[in-house]
Image 1 (cartoon, rainbow, N blue to C red):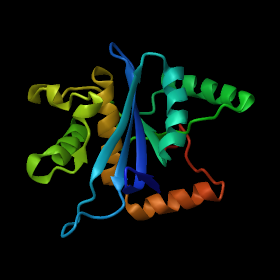
Image 2 (image 1 turned 180 degrees about the horizontal axis):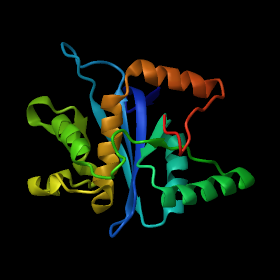
Image 3 (image 1 turned 30 degrees about the vertical axis):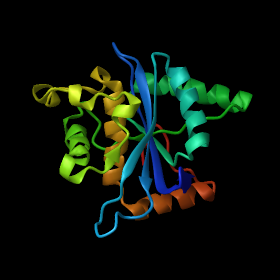
Length: 199
C-alpha cells in the first residue's frame, strides 16, 4: 500500500523493457486502491520512467525505485542473456548488501512481440474510458507506434513502451486475490518469484 500525493495505491508494479538500438527502460505504475465512484474502474498512474543502455544501472535503479514507490513486483520478458546479467547483479548485491532484484515473467511475453500488450495499453488510454494517466509526462511515446507496426513490433524496438505495456498488462491480468497471496508470501519470507519460474 502506497500513499502518494493524497492518493492511496493498492498495487504498484514495475516492468523492464530490454535495451536494443534504444536504451532499456524501467517503468513504475500504481493502481489506485479505490474504484472510481459509480464504476468498476481503478485508475492507474505512471510514476516514473528510467532509461539506460547499461543493464546493471537499470537493475540498480529498480532496486532504488522499489524502496521509493514500494513496488510490489517487477516484470520483464525472461531473456537468458539479460538474466545472466541479473544473476551477476544479484550475486554482487548480496555480497555488498546493496540489494537484489527479483523478476516475474511478463504475461504473454514469450516471443517478445507486444501486439497483445499494446492492445491492452491502448484500451486504457481511450478518451472515453481513460484510466491510465501520466504517460506523456514521462516521455513515453505510445502514440508514435504506427498501427501497421503494432502487429510486428518487438519489445526491444520500443523498450519504454514495452515496459509500460508489460506493467499495465500485468495489472489487468493478475487478479487482486492472487496479488494478495503474493504479498502474504513475501511478508512470510517466501518470495516465490524467480527469474526462471516467473509467478
